[in-house]
Image (cartoon, rainbow, N blue to C red; front, side, top):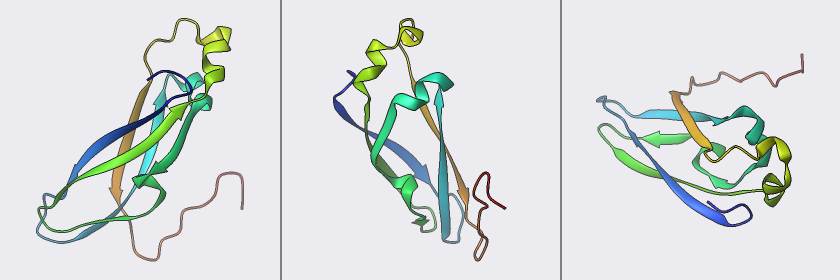
Amino acid sequence: VVPGETALAFYKAKNPTDKPIIGISTYNVIPFEAGQYFNKIQCFCFEEQRLNPQEEVDMPVFFYIDPEFAEDPKMAKVDLITLSYTFFEAKEGQKLALPGYQ
């Protein structure tokens, strides 16, 4: 992906169980310092996803790397950025705490 240009990637998810699952995703960018330049425009991770029994889906992420990435001397040797997701079952009625807020 060229910094400043948009890109579309797909992640595959499968529900291997015999019951519907509602899940949510969290993401991680490696190297950590490059995360500030990674911008998601549209992502399956913005909302809960329902997967029916044995269903397999492709989930899109539309993103770009901020052009300032190429200007940052700390990123000069970075030629690979890895975006990964953890998809886990949402627990009904459970709210996640916001970081830094009580």
